[in-house]
Length: 371
Length: 169
Image (cartoon, rainbow over all chains, first blue to last red; front, side, top):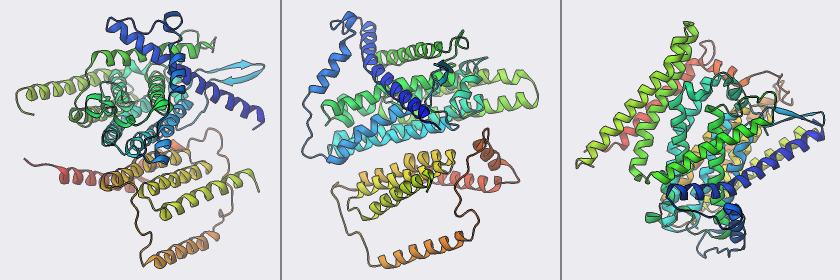
């Protein structure tokens, strides 16, 4: 344990935070441009080439805005809440491997901040801390809309956390480890999305709810709750909530890419280790486009349907997926027959179709008069 | 004194200080937040003893689930957030006495144990505590029976909760 190691850790952590902060700024630009294209508009294109300086202009605006603290709020918690929201979104990224390792001045530098043997549990624990920021923001604002937004959002996050945890279990079973680096290495032959496409889909839906993105952005349903839990926030404190949401989008796409889409793997990544982050970056861009696409095309779903979808459809489906995966691997192992292994995707897709049939039947019945 | 001991003492003082704040602060939501901070201190203590898995589970279960339920309960049942009440009832000396006795008894019993004053040794490389724990939980020689009994108990509690909340038309 010499001092150069500490320097390496601090520099890597610092660089990761910088990447996420820059990523947040440009994700807002990316989202606005992509949404505009989908809605046949132009989007921000004035500041700099194609509007590339727009995020900087926005940041300057937000920093110089007047910051109001309403008189009736509960000060300590009111200031603590945005901090509690941003910090987990930054810390989450620490266990995601960006690549293997490379040599710098005769020193091997690994492309991840932390190699934790319970990496995936670490992710769930940090994600569960993020709920606090939103609950406390809603409560300390002392405003009924903010409070309702806070309660809605925390109920939603807690409900979808179960599904998220079960999709993590699927990836753990396939990767035979809780360490994210081992899981990536296990995907050298085949990405897990091929073996378990339904698991990846459930994971993605659950993360949309977890980061409060459309169509699950109930906490911020403007027409019902003004702005939800951050109604009383202004200036940089509001920007912190905004920042947390977009950073979580980035980090969660990184995690999805790592668990199901092979992470930093790609052609020639072993010969040129610096290609690893590039591949991961490309995958993240594509997954983020998926999130933006959903926001542009899907209306927000009603709150009671959101909860019944989470509890009655997604949770049983994710349980079934975890069970199918485990059984398939066990049977293939015991009977030494690869056929059982390849039955995993087939049976999972059948399970997905059953779930879709349930939703369809339910919606049909509801459209015929009964609630 | 080694570095590990200094870190341990700092963490222990932080945990105890937060625990003291839980029972002395006059505001309920503050008490709940101090409780979160106490539980976090306990998680750090586990991490110091090389028990990564238990440390993370402590955060998931206690901070992520149980403490958030406390905060929910406070938020939904109290009208005024600057709510305060008396800190003690007239039996406080009995509680203090029991706490001191339990601490003294535990300290006395543990002082006879050979590992009482040892520092946690570094785990050998390649030692996978998580899979060992997992195997112990499902192996008949170890803890399969308590594990299954606990699962059945939790399932019964779950079914009971659904039954109580179920709205018969």
